Length: 324
Image (cartoon, rainbow, N blue to C red; front, side, top):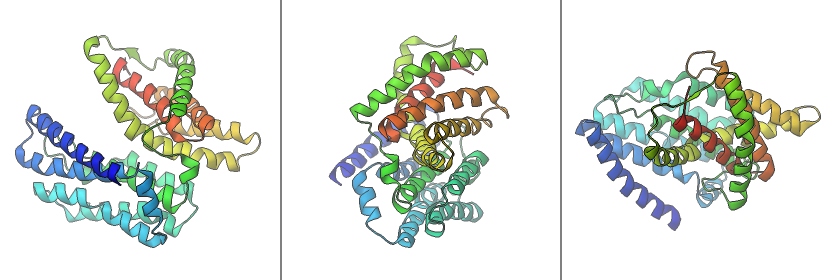
């Protein structure tokens, strides 16, 4: 708990400073800044709590699934209230929508203890509809706070999957990969580069950025990698490798491990069809191939943290150096 407390203190110190600099550079009005920064920091504090095993153990120790679900539901709402009340944009209908979605995420495994596929479908539906952009109003051009909803979804579902559903050992969830997990993730990344690169070129998925300023590329890559590792890769690997791949491996015919890996990779590719112009087959094909190597990294260590490394490296290369 001391580590978590010091992490939160550092987060707030860095977050306030970075937030003030950003809002000043982007000319975001002070009345928005005064509400957005506290809301984001409260959400970030709750989000990083999901990555601390001690906190997950304390949450699991509550024992009663109904009480666990109630706590998750209650904690899903304060960031929205802080932001919308602070900016005068609170809407009862949006709050009700958020409460319903958060309640479904929090109580799903209380009511349907083993309905994993349906839970993942619910999460995908929430994300693909873009409902958080409606719930969290953007009050200035560079003040998109829908990330509040996305982070809430990730940490609520993580606690539900790991603690209420009881998949803590199966997933290997966490923010910080071990040395062995870094090694496995890097190895699968090295395998992906020639194969994935050839396939990406064959389907004309992307081209190298011509306007890239190389002196800025390294810091941009590091910043992008951290964001990818701790948000995008963390959540997607939890859902696909931590839950779906073992589920499919268990129920598909022989050879189960191979079938589960391939099936999960195909589904991972398919969920990328809506990105950009639907159907984005190029993205889906490359994502499916990449998902195969994410799954290999997961199989090698039995934790999603190794898959997160491969995933974050691939996604960061795409975001920083390529244009699709």
